[in-house]
Length: 327
Image (cartoon, rainbow, N blue to C red; front, top):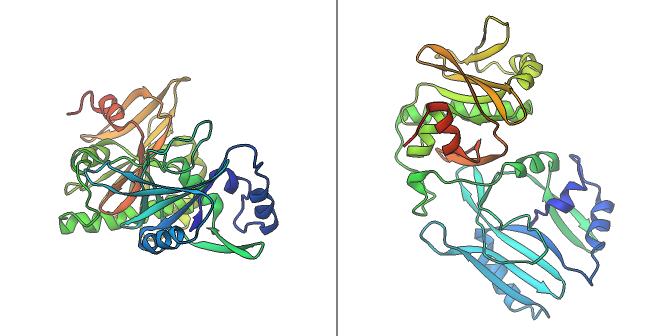
């Protein structure tokens, strides 16, 4: 099981964790007050883990929970309640190139859970084993990357997939697979350069309606213009896979970036308008269209062709503002 507790991991920031600090943090809990420690385990290990747990004779209550969101009943988490101390072990399900962790219905008064509060998704990650007394503890190798992932890990199913559970491939067009490969490469470039992005425009609409790309010729990607202006040169210089062209408007502000030989990707840039709204500029029907839309306050995760991408947590509201109505 891998330590997933955000409170603990937030205090061990850095690529290489401090073992002594981890030990101190795991020992600070006061046994006279409620305390929860969240961990996660892959579904393939769950059966043996539960058998060993059941035969361990722990002086604790063992509470298995389930998830029913996708018209199926699946294991969600196991809670080991030892007085005021609670271990939460959530189940990780492989979905394409990421892990999906379901929410559960276990309620803990006055405590917040790192997992089980929502369906969540995480990029598959490397782990490292650190010593804790005479035991070993597994934690994410790159904690900073993991904590950044957690901020947008709340997972949203598209409309046509939210009624059943099937993590196998849907039927894809060959062009969709090629397009998806290039979109996945672009996502990795964003991660490498620490650029925040989200799917928007017609790409978000295709996900919302069909869970896919629907033979897309172009992808529309939201970016913060200030962030991109600061990092675009580094972004251009670190990759030879794409040709990157930048177009600028009459005020010399970058409004669109065309990437790839076939002009596959368009950046839709945003900037602050006021405390509640932002400028949104995107390329549609051969023209740059500018709108003022509500700020996107939180980002979530979604699946396209078995890969995890970032989307707004309120996709329907965003689409309505962009397209003046969506069905």
